[in-house]
Image 1: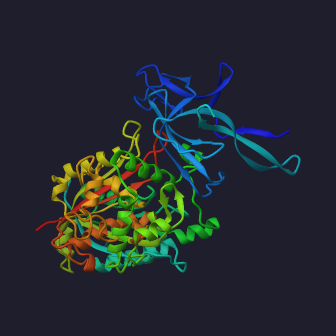
Image 2: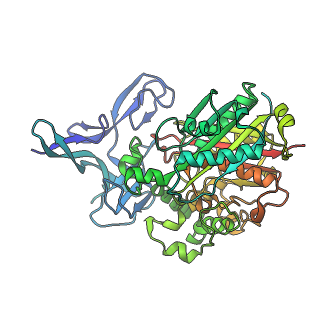
Image 3: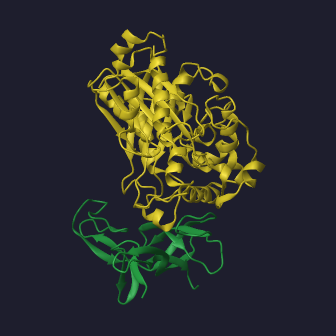
Length: 142
Length: 390
């Protein structure tokens, strides 16, 4: 069986069975934010709770890196995206064929394997493969 | 708070020097600074080192080779702003009356770092969410270029102009890594890293050191044996982006605007009072995107001013007359001190072929870290304003 791990803990959860990003919302100032931080980054309150973010994202700007950035192989398309109105973050976009992404284009969240890692298992004394699970976006309706 | 003055500067040539470590380059720059100041190195009462790669306490390793020791020494890593940070901490010590004279030295050997890593890497920052997605420095600045194209109508000729200008300027700078002019065709023919950024729109990997000695007014009067013009640190600001001031849109750096406004206020001047600036131009498009936040042109006008050649060596307001990071080179920890050395050289009228006639006041700026700061990575901005006083 192939082992799996998240690329980072606490970023991805299941919203009514569907994978979604976990952000946080502050009960004092009302602001929503991602990635989740320990105190509200707007007002430093600890009165915050986890919320699921929308799985739809809107492109501000996108560009494609043409050289390898380990563990990713080129072409690597990256986009600054807006989620739920007030959240702006960077995501990688996977495309079956390369299309130019423009401001305003809609993307959809996907959760899946980002890359594989090899780790030495001390018990079996063998190298084993681990699938690193994370999130990325795809053009909507792809 | 009391006034702080520049007593001496020192700088190595920038380039690729496999024979030297970062510490070696820091020592060379520091020795030059002591000689330029005309003091014995034992006079130094506090010393700061700025560097980003390699082991701890490299500052102590460097300064002990000048006989400096038994004083407070600290090592500061603020990415590309490490040098400004070292200078800023020294400035505060003297302005606050904690000491009379001290040294800030920035250095880096990226050749040494590449040997350590076993090859040149285009690395993402692991702790940064963008980095985990595969965002690199060129990746981020390709967003900046795309936004300049969309929002300011920039063409590729516009985006390449700082690289052409700064390579032209560096011909006159004997300390520069590259001394040859560059054409638009050469830039566009070089390999693409991240659309639309090609290799020659990026600064090189460099080794080098730069050092500055600051002192109080009283100390300057007593010890200025080399009769240098009196140059005051009119402003020194170290600032970081917070969640609210983070860079939501790569076209406009909020932290740069906040920092420069504090610097103008501290110096009691406006951008129109500056004769030149030395700024962070790790990427050609980055220099253009800095003109507006730094108030070198009105908001929305960066491309028109670029086309008017406003920032050229013979333009109305020269930016990076030294050749900048793009052609002079960018040994990360050294650059923040180097931009200040550059202003001193200009104000002393010692800049030779790239001298700005009658330069009396200049601005030095470095940005540290990346990136988007979408929310996850903070950006450091260090700005100094230096001016000639009677």
